[in-house]
Amino acid sequence: MDYEPLITEAQIAERMPALAAEIARGLPDTREGLVVVGPLKGCLVFMADLSRALWKVGVAHDYDFLRLASYGKGTESTGKVQMESDLIHSVAGRPVLLVDDICDSGRTLTFARAHLLTRGAASITTSVLMDKPARRAVPFAVDHVGFTIPDAFVVGYGCDLAEALRGLPYIGLYKA
Ligand code: 5GP
Ligand code: MG
Image (tube, rainbow, N blue to C red; front, side):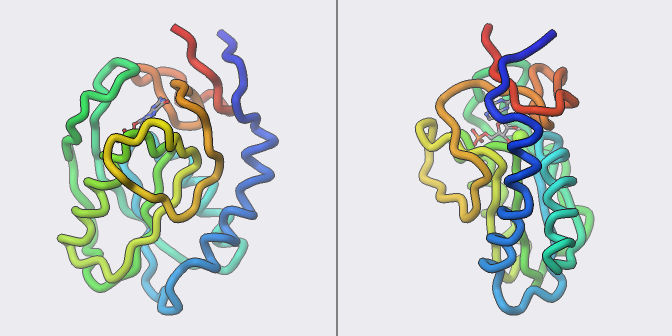
């Protein structure tokens, strides 16, 4: 099945090095021990591409993950963020780059940032591939945004519809 592309593979590939360079400039001077943290599973494809783009601009890092869920099976957030699994390593005293596919209501990143601070992260920088500012339910300003998109439900490049379509290599518009 085809989905109308909102952001093509070529556009994502072109944006990635510039986004990584922007992140690199914005990181604190002490980036020793930088850990990139993403909430699974939506972060996966973006994090994989961003990781390699960061490497190319000289930003060494390792990874960790949270498992957060708020969407259930539908296209509307339930409004409640649940942590299904926690970080594997300690982030205490370390700079963190918190990344996700989309910032929508802002609840997931608000939850994740608060959790990382509780765990003693030294600093938290945020980046998302896509920002939907029109949808914010809680105020959250993302530091580095790949693309600002309108209020639409998107699929592909890690973004699912009831767990399907994550492997679609571009960002498509889902129309029910
Ligand atoms: P928030 O907590 O900001 O409302 O939503 C963040 C999470 O909801 C994202 O990590 C993403 O997994 C999911 N999400 C938000 N908007 C969309 C969308 O348009 N499509 C899909 N597939 N997931 C979305
Ligand atoms: Mg998500």
